[in-house]
Length: 280
Picture 1 (cartoon, helix red, strand yellow):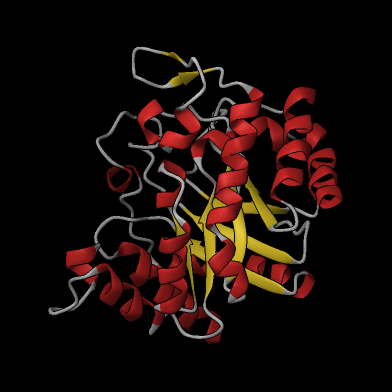
Picture 2 (picture 1 turned 90 degrees about the vertical axis):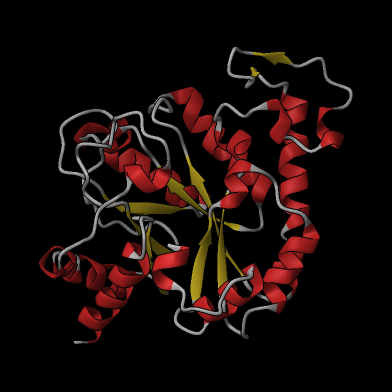
């Protein structure tokens, strides 16, 4: 994306963020999934964007029950724990106290964004093995409480949460927690790791993520996220969402449309096309 979308002369991270913020008024931070950001980094984000700009921050992997390599933890979290590590150097069954310390450090890191009223939603994207059961419903309540009073958006990647017999209870749970259901556009496939394009509002804000419809890479082992989400939406595919988005806008105070098809310039190009379609 850097070479494909940013013009010549825009090289540094600071320049890229300023350029991006001149075209869009919100962004989804993905790097925070791989490592907890520092307050100084969050302060720079706030300083380099105009008033009213909003950052949605993806939760650190340990917060959403993903396997996290031990070296991704800050040293202060690794110290004092006898961690069990798998063959991929990921932490096995992290102690509850370690997970809660990770929540605390993640919360503190975002304070500069809160101070400038630039923190949007915390994106809790759960792994495909996070299925709908009572223990995981309890974890949703536990994790949103640890992130309070920040607002949370929950993205499921196991279809059991939205099966007809469970959908109402899932949406009721999110509503009771004040958490936004993340609507998704994904490949049109059958299987437990693909969710339908459901337009639902469970909080003040509505949130949609466009992952692309690349069916060949969705469940494949690929080298990068860019390869997995390599898909450029056609205008008629984006137009399918105009009516659902209007429905979301009628029920939510704010509606965010986020493009995760992060190959080359596909995401910003489709985002600009979607804005044009919505304005028409």
